[in-house]
Length: 176
Image (cartoon, rainbow, N blue to C red):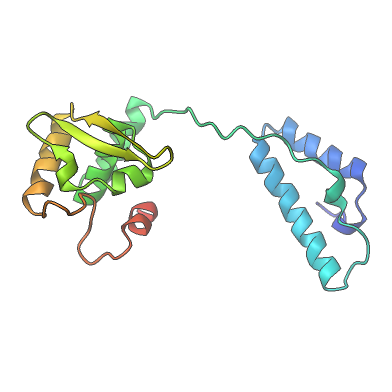
């Protein structure tokens, strides 16, 4: 940390370092990551007989992390996102489905043609986290058009989100 040697740091120095990260308004999970790196460096030094002491982070408790995410995109951010992806039909459909239904990543990727009722503007969605199903509604005309276009060219059991020549659609979507 800085010019200090990690293996010679005291608990007080580490706590002071942690407090400086807290004062810098870093998220608890980010602060814990810093300490994970310090711990990994210490463990490497111990395992490779570079250092024969104890890992200094063992006496530092990790900060509690609240992974609940309740941030929503602003209208401006949504417009910017849709403008950026509008020429990629797969990304556009994925994004519109996610924004319209609030479905999680795997939920959106696993929607099949048979799950969509265009006449009633309903999509049956599977919540893989809770092992349940629920209905989403197609209230957006752009989404309705994108779904209609995609569904003309696929079979009943085919997934809506797919890209020709792409074997792993989840990696494709994540990377894009």
